[in-house]
Amino acid sequence: MLSASAHTIQWLKPDIGEEKWEFFNHPDKQDFYRRHGIEWERLLSAFDRGSLEPYPRSGRIGGIVVSGAYHQYDDYARYLAKAKRGYRKSYSAMEESLQRAGSLTLKAPIIICCREEALLFSGYRRLCLAWNYGMVPYVWLVPLS
Image 1 (cartoon, rainbow, N blue to C red):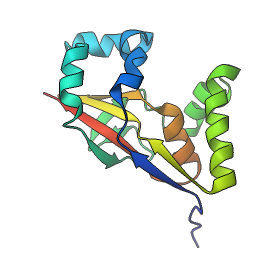
Image 2: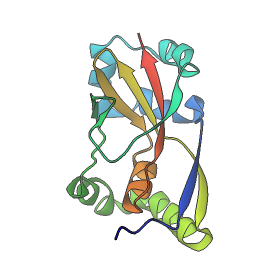
Image 3: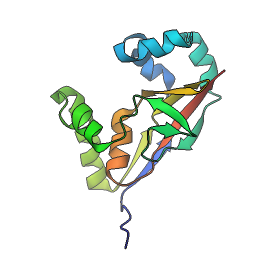
């Protein structure tokens, strides 16, 4: 028999303005932006063409490799469970809220896709929360042409 999660998450379209730091300051993502010639204005103009898409635990979405998805449990242990307290704190708060209420409403993580390559732009902790509770999260998938 398979067990289903009694917890639920409702996913909403995120606000790209709240994620500006990821574009301008996250050191591990800058190479992706440079390789694809992505500027902030280009991302802003494409953002509303995105859509909520299911993202089962995987390193790919729609057959395209997603850089920074860190979907395996060992990745979770390395990047989140053993991360510095400040990084873990928001995950722990979401997890406690989910356990207490049984459901949450969260802004969807963002994946940007350019040609045959994708990047988890933001929302790793939200992905982990859903994956760790056996749920299929939704992401805001932004195609950049």
